[in-house]
Image (cartoon, rainbow, N blue to C red; front, side):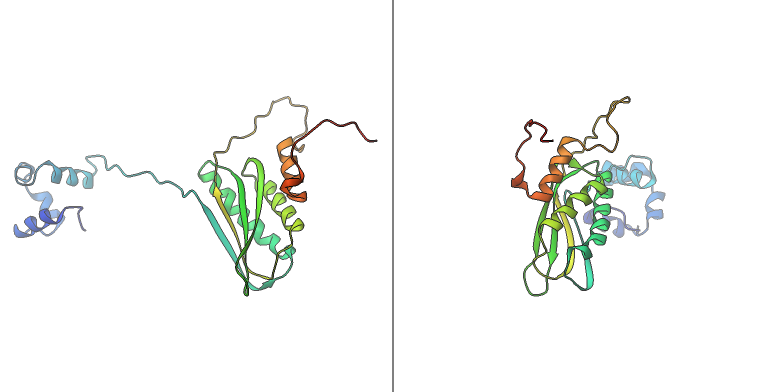
Amino acid sequence: AHAPLDERTRDALAGMGVRRLRQLFALPRAGLRRRFGAGLLEVLDRLTGDAPDLRPCYQPPDVFEARFEFDDEVRYHTGLLFPLRRLLGDLCAFLVGRDGGVQRFELVFEHDLRPPSAHVVGAMTPERDPARLFELARLVLEREPIPAPVRAFGLRATELPPFVPAGRDLFEARPASAMDWPALQARLQARLGEDAVYQWAPHADPR
């Protein structure tokens, strides 16, 4: 095995006939310290577990990208719903792993005879529920037809804010299936367009 030693130390050890770790561990520590300093002993102690070997923590990427290729061209949005569900499932699993959410993402369409195109899907608050995100994306696909036959379909999310679960009262009277105002607004914007809904205002019941 290769120990993490600098080239000068390796050359000096090779000049002493030390070419394997077991030979290095067999040498007196006091002599190694005098000749090479404490740094070499720290390396050996990390290799044996006698000293902590601090490593940088894994940081998930700040961008999610995934794509789905088709054998044949897809001409209608209904043919994209199955891969869309799969891609959103992968996205939400990624978000759970980084304890984040997504508020805006792109559906990317790759075509044979023209540059890629994209639809933007947005939510009012960070989400990571695959069913909610699928419903928003489906409404966008229904509202905005795909511009050309699709050869590959992808999902890209570059804004991944922290996710804060909605607080619920244990004795809340509202049914669990009821939709909150931000979710309703996001759904209406997905169906009608982002510019179609600006704010809420009270209005008399027309019935």
